[in-house]
Amino acid sequence: MSPDKLKKFLFILILLTFFSLAAEKKFKVVIDPGHGGTNIGAVSGNIEEKDLTLALAAKIRAFFRKHPAEGIEIVFTRMDDSSMPIKERVEFIEQHQPDLFISLHFNSQKVLSTNRGFEIYYPPDFVSKDPASTALFYDKVNRSFYFGSIFRDLYFKANLHTTWRLPLNMFSQKYNFGLFDDTTVPGLLLEVAYISSPEDRACIENPLFTADVAWFIYDAIIQISNKNN
Image 1 (cartoon, rainbow, N blue to C red):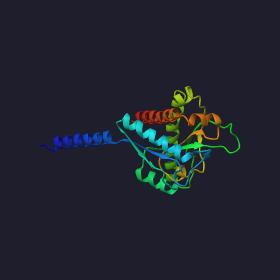
Image 2 (cartoon, rainbow, N blue to C red):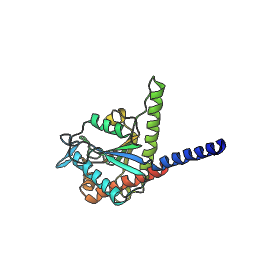
Image 3 (cartoon, one colour):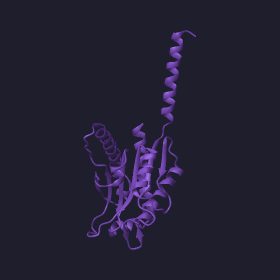
Image 4 (cartoon, rainbow, N blue to C red):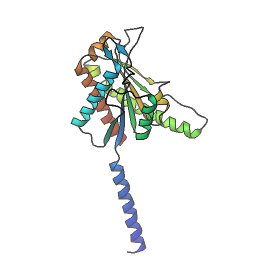
């Protein structure tokens, strides 16, 4: 083989290898059911937040098993009632280096029972004397906002809004949240509903509501993955 043909052959081989690796790379999502174990989270009567987030995670996992999504990998920080400190959750997320992590929570308000609705949060802006760190955090925040906006736009078409009449209460940055502060990858915090609200609690106590929340999250991940490719 002549030197020129050898160069062309190697160039084509490199291209094929690159596209093969690119095709094999999956969009990885870490789903973090908040609280667990002795950390029960918000409480209202016999309802504990740790149980709600775990039940929601189980529904999401069931949808991905029933409707496999090619090119998407889902990993859960916990799938049982075990304690998991923030530090361990951060280490788990950093170890997996996902394209996105989603922290599942249910809200509560001790003073006002009128507060209700679904809330989406993304990491706050970060400015450091180190330009490299600032650039890293800017990219993380920018992509988190983009992923969160897909959740926001999809929400108004989802059953949560059209059937359950659950309002979208907030789409904003979240300060002093350990998973945002100490991780280097894009992330979202979803506060599904207020267990302290009589209207929201009526939804929460209906298993069909949990299924619709899980399907909304499943659908949003699918759309994010498609737009990310």
